[in-house]
Image (cartoon, rainbow, N blue to C red):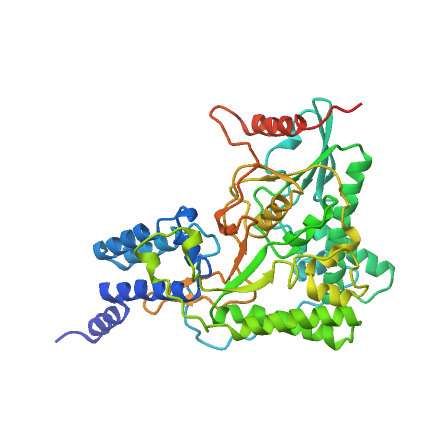
Length: 487
């Protein structure tokens, strides 16, 4: 007879033993993943094109062979991860696997804001440095460069470089999100306290956003006053952020800026953004604008309602991507819906086009910075690297598309648009792998997908035997060579 304790241990071992490897379940997960991408991955048709540089049929075959050769859950899981990574789209990425809920998890109360403690208060509402404020190339270490703000005690890291008789302004944008600049929040807090304005999350958040953008404009004007002949805006190692990547280009140059075309996936995951635009336009109309504004709002509203009604109306089979590659121009059905522009219903507006901010911001979001347009009218260069992603790519692309700036450095990482709204992840049935699946696309001026990355106008690629300092100096000399010597 087996002792009771030994029997209990045997039962426990049987219960805790991992389930045997189920190859068919993993193959079903792969089939589910491909079907889901066909239905809801906005960039799939682009990825199937020659221009993307991604050989999707080969990627699918490699994944199938890896699954066929797998003998464990770990090997099969790695095969699916490699498949997703093979698209080289940082927005198509794995999320942490979640354990099943055991009990209800109530949301904690929000922290109480102490008007006398701006540091803790700004941190409590999410304002914190989350990216390196140093320039992506060590410009600070070069002779002739001096900092006017270090990006820690100041909102931005800003400097001036004297190079071969030229004076070049330097501005670091490490992220396109005001919450990444805690000094903006703390200064907004101080201004509210001085004005005896109530300290609330909403009030401080709005004030910080306005101060952040105005501070950037003021720094650009200060560089102009200091004799800068050109400005380099460093967005290297910038992971992105929000729509400020499309707003901030309006601070540069003297010509109107047009935003990129925006598309959303022709699937339920695209509906939320269309609804958001419809709600915003309806709200602006409810404010009873003038006749011209009313007509333009109604026209935009009708267009978005028609787009929403067209969701799912045109069958689009993208299963060809697993078998063949096609030229982008020949892909007639891409499973996308026109969603206006990155700036909203219109590609942009002149400052105060309607004399009605509600109408202006409903039609073109960038009018939030209309009082700051053209803060820097001179030559501009955008420094990019392989870790320039998402909203930072939107900034670089918009500047390049409009001829407002030359890009310099290396090709950006290639994340493209990513997400409009909160999109639930894809969860695979067997493995419970969770994947983010992008639902929006921005098109370049030449009609290509921004997810391909932004190639530099002036390549400054690393070379053998060259230090980062030497490459930084080469980059500055390249810009200086395009400028006239100072008198």
